[in-house]
Length: 121
Image (tube, helix red, strand yellow):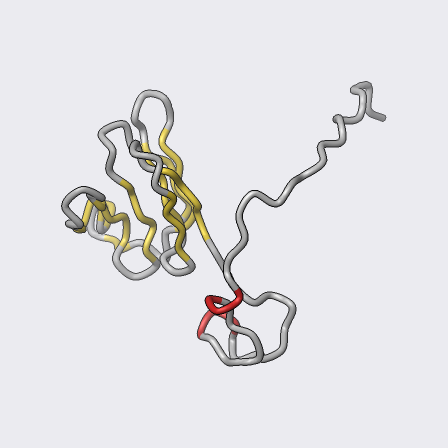
């Protein structure tokens, strides 16, 4: 039994479309597992805007999030959490492991209002 009203229906509008020449149509791609002709032509993770309004997206690594200082944190399956400075283009490790154990595959990250980083592994 649910005492809450159903949530309102929100109509989604297309805000941005990936050009067809950037899609993997009828061709193999690592992230598609070798399947050709599937419905999913492109795989984007973690779309995020930096402080200057630039849009960043990725397909692999597994996620992006902006920080208060204007950098982007990247969840990378093999390298852990990376920090990227959009102004200089410099990228490097932020968190490679916890104690002596490497991560299994960081994915989907978020920074809260106090600057704390949360991610799945």
